[in-house]
Length: 258
Image (cartoon, rainbow, N blue to C red; front, side):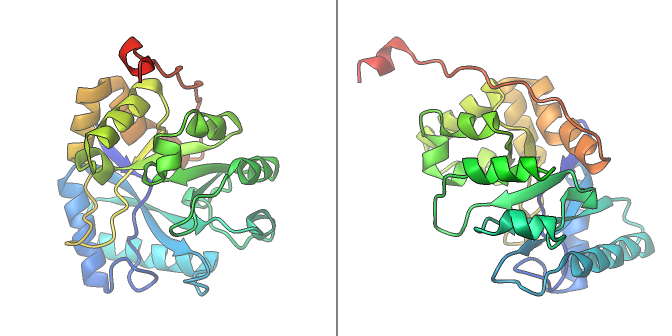
């Protein structure tokens, strides 16, 4: 299996709803490494619920984690990251350097929908792109409007949004309809990144290996390698990735009857 790159993981002790202690954070890192991950986001939420999580605070916590990994002999590479909740002034916040980009390189920004809400993000994506940063939408499969909508996710990609799906959604879909929709996403090139969205050594483990194997089964190793490793590697190293337009959804003659 190709070395995995996890671009969405909450690893910084005490900063949000992720690990509570340094020991828990290190245990998560050991779990991720044993599962095949070699590069991982050391991330935290940036939202109204965590107003103290400034870019500097996340950077310092990330540096501390790196030092601890070295001291404990855990050969896992980490990079700083924030999961930014979308809000009306997000473009202004970005321009004022209040948000931390993926790997702190100023090129990509991991964003999420407001809790329990669906928001049309096309204008937000366009504004962020004009401001010089490419948004990566975290776990959009949680929004039925995107997962099952007719062209909604494609519209976001068309205006510059990238897509990150969570590993647990791949391995534990809620039902067969969700499984079919996710399989279709991977086969058509909708998904650009895989992330564990890990929060804990027990409750939400930072594992991606089984999801990688499932994506291989669904769409082949080239797709699995791209979304679970090579795209994440490029982003973490400050390289631009080439994104092809997603394939058109195939509609069977039987579904047309309904």
